[in-house]
Length: 609
Ligand code: ASP
Image (cartoon, rainbow, N blue to C red; front, side):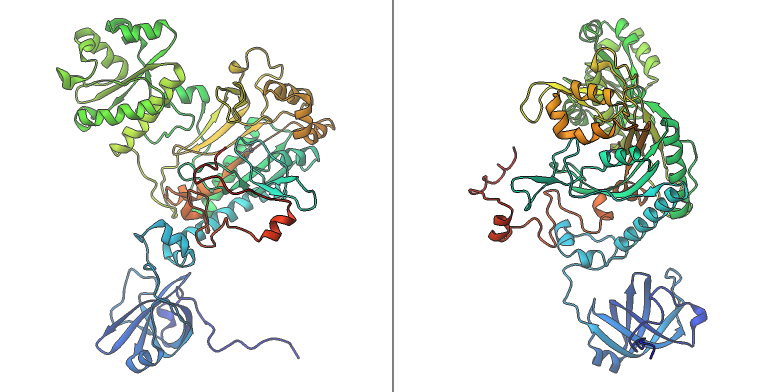
């Protein structure tokens, strides 16, 4: 006895994307879903769909009547492959059809709440509630397949470079990536909590101490943030770490991995090496630490013009050590109306600017701008020379503290470029896609920034711009924390921060110094990071690493804006899973097991601490 089961008669011989001309005359069984059903003069045509494609099936009237098929029924259909009288060139299976001899309904479907079709226009809530139907749609299946191929290619690229895949714990201790932790109460240790990892950061560094040398992981990370646009409370990153390296080694590894991944998953050749800018240059030229380099319109320092402009407000700013900068919007003289200026001013103000000055070269009077008075004659000529603007263009100017000037003009640059259609869109994830794939390394980030209003209500203090394990540019860490450089770097693609990393602190005393600067006393250092400090006292190798947000890069390579469409079961902006209705209440005895008791809940909206 072999113990083997017979194949059932209803089981498919081919997928719905497989049959071609050469199969004509042969028998085939297809399994799939009824995508559509049409009656053409007593003959019924149905399209059967599965993950691989769609095949047209022809049903004689009597068969259709007995099968009583409805859309989205799951069926098995047996018949003979025949050449179509009217081929459909646009369908890969369009030369043939299956002439059904029998149909078996494997299971019936209720009428779906929305059409199972591409480019569906329905509410996100409905799609998420019935995610199994949403994921049946061809564009979602393509997205998940692309994700699978992309991650598979990336994994292969790391393995080929001698990286070892190691899993790190999900039930762990709080890791400081700057967000709130998801906590899991311990039943065995009443009153104690695990935290879900915000990233595998400390574990991967400890793997380096243990001599693993090169590690990577497709790692799930959890951050309990108020969800800003297009974030998920749990997300996936490709996390890696390497020993005995400096920045160049990490960059070379990633450039190689990404080139292999793009080639393997998409057939796309990425030009290497990726360009680089320092953080300061990125801020100075683009007003952003994640510059979109798919278009120009860079920030320009206009101090030289201010000195001849006679515009006292700006002159005083320069005298006070502030910055006056501008962007020149090509064609903005026509394209941006006076009414639009209100909106632009709002954008600038969102980023802290007190105002927005503007000028349209060649336009007289009030329509020429808020500072037209200071742009007459030589002054106007000078502003044109400095900014490169000419008649028909629009010059937008902000004067403020340096970082406010950068950030508000950076935001205006993006806003205007989007409004005026200046940003080339990615042309999809197929072989030969020309992107544009504007990768960019941003290097030399500052080490610390000042948090003037800490969320815990404490006094203003220094916080790490990256995370506290990032090495300082100078191991001696001299002087003012605000002026200290770090060895952190980011990778940007088309204006999105894809990932970040750094060369790490591998000297225990430097790590303690950084913790000191962050305001952690010895007891706090021991309680939170004692195990890391301990590990660092046993011959840690110099090491560094990086992590890329997989959801984001998968979405970007599909030309999609939202990561929700490349996550199989995402959560809403309020961190709810609408399909399984998580989070949800639990049985009182489960709370008891965990020693949790609550005396009623805060009123709606009051849950925030
Ligand atoms: N832990 C960092 C993050 O998750 C990445 C890194 O520094 O490697 O963003």
